[in-house]
Amino acid sequence: METFIKIIRWFISLLLSFIFVFIILIVIPLNSISQIATNRDHVKTWLQESNLYNNALKITIDIMSLQKNEDPESDPGSNAFFTDLTKKISDEDSELGQLINSLVTPEFLETSVNKVIDGSYDFLEGKTEKPIFEIKIAEDKETMISIISVMFKEKIRVLPDCDPNFVRPEDLNPFVMECKPAGFDENVIVEFISVNKDKPELDTLIESMKISSDMISIDPQLARQIQTGFYYLRLLPLISLGILIIMILLLLLITPGFKNGLIMSGITLFFPSSLVLVGSLTLRQKFYDLIEVIQMQLPGEYLFIFQSYFIALLKTVYFDTLGQLLIFSVLVFVIAVILFILGFIYHPKQVLPPQEEPQIKKNPDLLENTLPESIHH
Image (cartoon, rainbow, N blue to C red; front, side):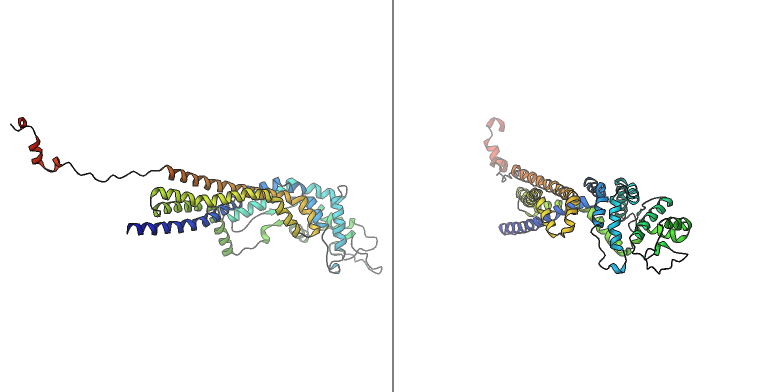
């Protein structure tokens, strides 16, 4: 009967060990993702080290140069506007180029992006009901008016000429012009804005030029689900530690013999941790193979932008993630080795069978007969 129970215990122990191997293979990568995804500082560091802020204006210009309106009739002059706008922004001597370069600095971009990151993480951490952030190109109204003036000047410059019979209205609104009247003076835009700068319509236009979380609407139930998921993602390292302890205790209790339980626990942790460890070291050598695969999927016109600006960001994220994966796999591997060593050096105390008491203790008469006669007298 005792042998049968041992066989059953070994069978359950092996079955649990097999299940735990797969659990650990999932838990280690999830912990790596948890450590990175739940830390806002990781995201900020990635963007900072990727040099994206210094190249952001160049990226924008390159992307704008690829934009084309497939239906030019729906917005006359839109393609020419984008082409001309791209040239003017690239030209640091142009009015628009000087304005953009003075406003859209790497420091401004980093501060603005960090506002979005902090607002998003505050929401995920349950501090707010939705992401809250606001980004303004300029804080003062006069600068905003200058930006609007320059932008509409560029817009009107590329409009098609009006029909020769076009009669220019007295109250011409340059903001809604669809063609450029003959002899049109661009200073009309500046005058128009100066006259109307205190009107609510201009305030509405200025307000629309900011990037704000007001445009984001999240269902309260969905928001709670997202925040709950993020909460458990942050707790994942503690949950994983609890799972690890329970696994080891179960194997120690079920496996016949404490020594065997230690060795079985070590084997169970050793295989998945060594597999992830080797995998993470191998993947470190495969980064450029991954880049090649991505480049094959990208449209040709975007390939230059990806190669010039985004490989550095992807490289930072890739190696940071693998670094976390390496840390967790090494940690589990070390625990496995410790359990192995404890299993091999542990020697249970040998329980000796009870020895039969001497006959003298059991038979007092025998003791009396064996004593010398002098003691009897």
